[in-house]
Amino acid sequence: MPPTPSTLLDGLNEAQQKAVMTTEGPLLVNAGPGTGKTLTIVRRIAWLVRKGVPAGNILAVTFTNRAAREMKERTDALLGEAAAPIFIGTFHLLGLRILREQGRDFTLLNRDEQAEILKTVVKSGAQALQQELDRISAYKNALGREARPPDSYASYQAALAERGALDFDDLIRLPVELLQDEGLRRACRERFTHIIVDEYQDINPVQERLLRLLCPEQGNLCAVGDADQAIYSFRGADPGNFLDFEKDFSGGRRIDLVLNYRSTATIVAAADRVIGRNQKRIAKQLTPTGGQGDPIVLYSVPDDRGEGAAIIDEIELRMGGMAHEAASESSRLETARRSYRFSDFAVIYRTNAQARALEDAFAASGIPFQVIGKPNSMQRKEAEETLAFLRALAGTVAGTDRAQLRPGSPEARLLTEADFFDPRADAVALLTMHMAKGLEFPVVFVAGCEDGLVPCTIMKDGIDLEEERRLFYVGMTRAKDQLVLLHARKRFLYGRSLGQKTSPFVREIPTGLIESRIVADRIKKEKPEDKQMGLF
DNA sequence: ACCATATACATTTTT
DNA sequence: TGTATATGGT
Image (tube, rainbow, N blue to C red; front, side):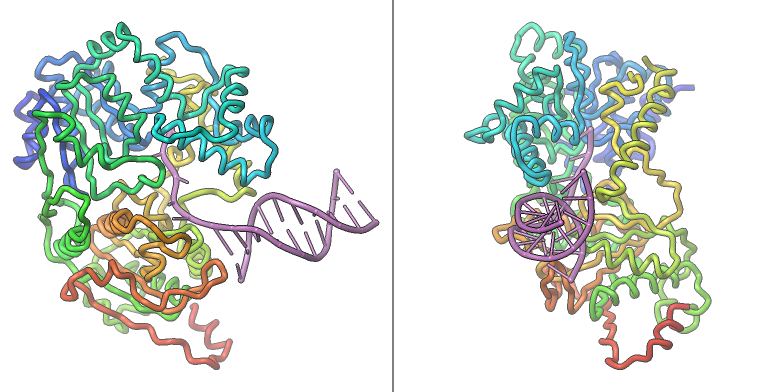
């Protein structure tokens, strides 16, 4: 029995209900971390259908396949067959569909193929090629805001055209060009009468333009997101679109989702205090619904090896290591008394370079772990082959329920490694703060909480301090039960010694919410046998 | 074509 | 400090 409109509001708080029921006109849903954003979007879609909006008129766009898939599965679960005509997908899939429907035929290039083609028109090393590709991408996404295209631009574009090829950026850029045609624009606007955009704070100028073309001035555009989690401006995303939404869409409404269902009150209070320091934001007070929980733990460790050791110690303690049970003071903690799986833990860091020392520590401990991120060049070929196979498989499987996907087709090419990541694998996740967005874990370790790394100023000065703070905020708010911050008093990174001071962001957390633990420097002349014994 | 050695240089990256 | 590319030799 399909749910009636009233059951679609069940279990939602007042703000969520409003976000579901405010179906006409521009609407900004300002949704803090853990506030039930996806639930709200899915109920809104179902609500629209139950209110009589033809399912084919609904457009829901996201940035990642993962988010799109989750949204699609949950919508299907609510609506069943009736959900089929709803477009739920990434910006790139939307662009691809528009191009296909307009009769455009093309092959879609992946990054390596782009580099191959660029290599035919400019002579430079692999690294320089990658940089040039980045510049080309930035230019395309800036939509002419950038004054001059990079030197190779014209010849690169000519080389693409010669081969009838498009790159990922073209999937958004070209539809924007096509939609300059008034007839097509009108047709699209009639088709998509209700638009929902997830992670709106991360849209770039071309994506914004595309939305403007698809949606009339006072149209039913529902922008969902959180300016406090805007972490991709270095890539051309413009959080100003989110902040200025109410100005840009006059008569638009705003609904704040502030009730956090994910984290303990301690974690919410700490994160809220930290992010409150930012100026460029829509102030909202994130409010916990859960219990107080344990204090945030701040470890001060001698160096990066000590950091790995402390993390492993804490994990073993929670996995019921008998050796720790009686000895450790930590067994008093609430989180120490619960039972965990390895996949309940995540180690989050600012730079990939930090992963190595942590990997070594995990490898030595025997705790299963997986580093989520870029494969190195050695693994890359292998990964690419596996990926091609999986894409082909996905093509045949998906092809059975929808004609949306053939092996090797451009649509299959939109799938990435992350889309085949098996979340059931019971292993500790090691990942960057960027990769962690949208995920949650019962226990989160944030490694490298030192000045220079959080915020990350070692590479470049003139960083965006507020974006760095948002990153740390994203990291903190991934934790459900327990947040553990680690600060190495000494760290070697890129051949430089750094990390004497604790991260200034950590110092913004009220002291009452933090419990400090200091691991002393190792005694200089420790016998090697003792160290070995200590591992077992 | 290959291997050894020099040297430059280093974040984050949804598709 | 490491890696990845550039170079110079064979």
